[in-house]
Image (cartoon, rainbow, N blue to C red; front, side, top):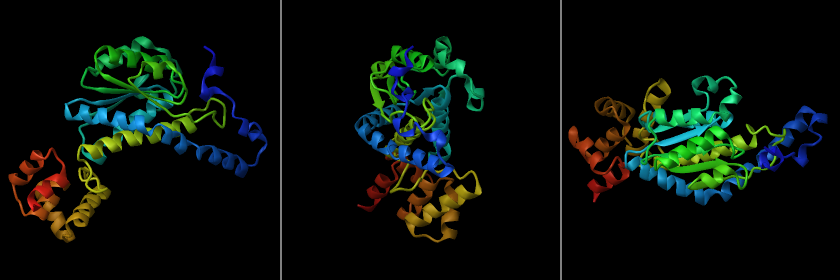
Length: 299
């Protein structure tokens, strides 16, 4: 393995003297490098959008979005997946994060797990990866054996396979049906890919799930109308959303939420005057797209 050929392992000429700087000048250097990340992501937007289209198609066909990675990359995938149920009301199995080494690797470094090819195949089989799914391999280097093996297995069973990497012409880029290559360049500290590469990966993951959830009707305007009110903050957020969309009072919004146990259904009832099962039937008729359901009644 020649690490010198991997973009994220090269030395950054802008930070060669960073160990001689004051704390303020160190963080300024880090900040200057971080500013380059969104520009690098911008170059990959067309491919990101293509992957979103495939994720939306998978969701509409009963398929799943599955992230797979090791170390920082794996943790970011698990983080993004774990945010979907409370934010968008999705079932926990719709977006899954798989990390080399399992749950223990979320908290502790298990660097050896990234080389375990057999474990990758086992992990993919455990969750029954199939042709309906979209599997996204995440690795800054584009070469992590665990992630590459998981991608190859997913491809062998007919899944759509994408990759998020920060290095050109990597093995993962070549294996993927869709390669999201975000060239963030050498890190402030050589090889510390939890920094710019990790930031880039997080931005891309944000886009994949957020755009996909918007496309399948989980957002009305820019409001998360499928939010699950599981704590005081989210209960208040659901109430605020109903008030914002409908113009109802807080008391009316609270009553509607109690009646329907759904932010979407509460909004639809208050705007259209429909009640009971008719509210849910109308939402179902429009595949959960609140805007389409409202417009069908206001024509």
